[in-house]
Image (cartoon, rainbow, N blue to C red; front, side):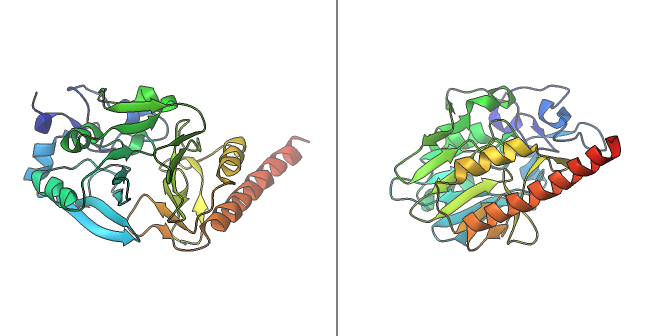
Length: 275
């Protein structure tokens, strides 16, 4: 089957290796099957519907790469323009020749890293277009919908992409949920592992965002401990302009404190009722 005709789930936007009746990513409790049932599209279908690439600056050395109009859950990827080569953080479903050419003009893609399965999109198409490996934490191996030799599964708490770029297995939202730290730019790229919320001074932590299932306190505390050694001012979330523009490390700390205090209040109230 030609790549342009491989099935893409309309709800989560993930491309599969072959036709199937279900999308396991959407059937998981962290996501959902669309209200009209499981529906599919393809890259060719998205192009025929009028979707096109969207490329815009999002910050110093950071270019947003998305789709207009948006597909699936509407996220955008980020192209980090580094001296060692560009890294594409996170992923979208859409890709065509024009978008490939635009990204090539910006220096192409040397590596791809994706925060969690809801953002896997058409990662193998992007990998092949730019001859770039895809870095995913091994704990999320089972969610890869189109297995390929280009996917690099790493293990442990951290993994260096370069002297300047470090993947951190925060483990929020998914066991393999990862964030990316760019030391020279003092920036953290979080997807929705740490969700930059509407009040962009804060982030939040959820096991499921669409189904409003809070993340477990011990998972949040572990993520906070892993992030403690890293300095960052900006936190780039998963959607256009979802960015904490300053004092990012403190924003994450105070957000975790606020989150954990509300969870503790709920636990104390439940204990009181039991007594």
